[in-house]
Length: 490
Image (tube, rainbow, N blue to C red):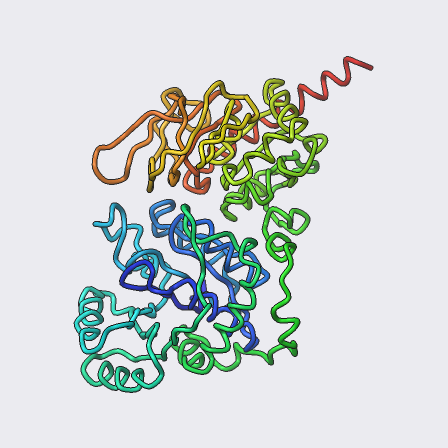
């Protein structure tokens, strides 16, 4: 199998400017006519949403904890066309893996697994010669010799020339350019990380500004060369006015999301008539791994998006329901006032509709949700429990889940995922046990039955495809029961 082209952007720590520079680089490469694809290292949902917003094509996640080295490389190779150039955004510090102490799960571990070179993004603001031991330390840990360049962030053009000469004279690393600090050019954040792209109405304009700046001060040609691409990989850029370049509509966020491309999803299934899976997808419920959606489609589901926020009823002729994560607390009033949807979901689940609910979707199934200001709102009422804001991270990080009684998974097998939430429930469920990958911490969680799985953990289905197989079987049984009921009424 031919090696893929691309680079991994990494940093010594979070907050170094990786996301902004990654987005600017993607836009600059696009404008140069390069066929770009993007990935995020680790479990984060929001960065790939930014990547998809800029590119107009889906971005995905790559995670060596979720799927191990071999499977992660397989996913990377499958999702990266031979003529594409991959831009992979790292997570945290370059070597920060499981528990912050292991290499496994780190950006460095991923870069080695997918055989791509690393370009360091160093925040050089307020720093001079001290930058040398910082970079030297990162290089000294690079036993695989894959760090191939440095981009200096938040440094003036005037001082950059001196820093570049200093670094390249004293260290064996190439400085590829700088990204100057610019007023108003930043990505905002909230309690789960970066704000959603649709909330930042000038995001596209900001990224285009960033790309223009990057092209002036960073060698795009050297980045392409380091990533294994030649001049033949760059086509003539499309003619595009600045006005068109910064056009930004809500549809831009969703139209390229995998959940809205169900007609274009090509799986290996041989199902003549796919089972319809209703997927909550709107401003409230928006956290979905593209790899999960693809696996659901390959299994035989037709992915049918709907909005618990705006729609009044569930899609017709469905055999399953998926409520993903997101921000129900920000739309608790609107969700609470949509009584017809709450009733439809509650009655459908009580009527046997197979269902999955993660984090935000799990909160929505509660009897009530109390927001960050202490206002309490009624929710779908499927689960006889209440949820509220705790003012701090309740649970955070990777987990492996095992069932107390085998239902969705083969006996003694687990499925991997992560948690990241400031809200908690009076009843988190007790049907599974979650274990951290480092240390001995474990706890009970998840409401589970033969045809439902509801809980805080965000699952990564490719870590155990048996989970999706079981859910598909349950959806098929549900469809058969509905058809039998229909026949009996004739």
